[in-house]
Image 1 (cartoon, rainbow, N blue to C red):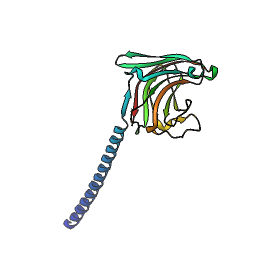
Image 2 (cartoon, rainbow, N blue to C red):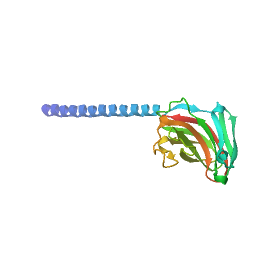
Image 3 (cartoon, one colour):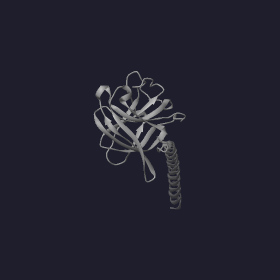
Image 4 (tube, one colour):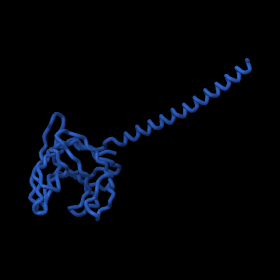
Length: 205
């Protein structure tokens, strides 16, 4: 009986060692996954923000530059601790027009690792667009865009660079982040009243 008890204990010991060994492996795997998760999240944080403190960085543009008759304005106002940009106006497709926009140049900003652009926006239950221009968009009507829909409450929009679509076949299909030179919020493509509020734009790894 003692011999059998010794053998049983030895087998039990081996099983325990085996269980502990695999548990250690699992712990190591979980730790590795945890650190990978933390690392990825660190790189998804914003590395550049525009909170509209420098109003002169933004320009209001209409289709008047090409003979259109759309009109509007860009205004900034403070709400608690936030500065909000308000683009409003009447978009008209007369005379081959059809847009108003606010644009910011992105000179001297390293966007090589840019993966997405995020912002908070609200408006009048209409569809708007975020345009980006790159070193490849040579002609005035060339751009890459993503559309977004706003309601009367501020919502966060996260727009991956990979989702931006080219405006015509002459452009490369893929946007290279390092080539981005400007962004613009655009009311475009139909006759309607534009009323868009934007705050807290982030450029994210």
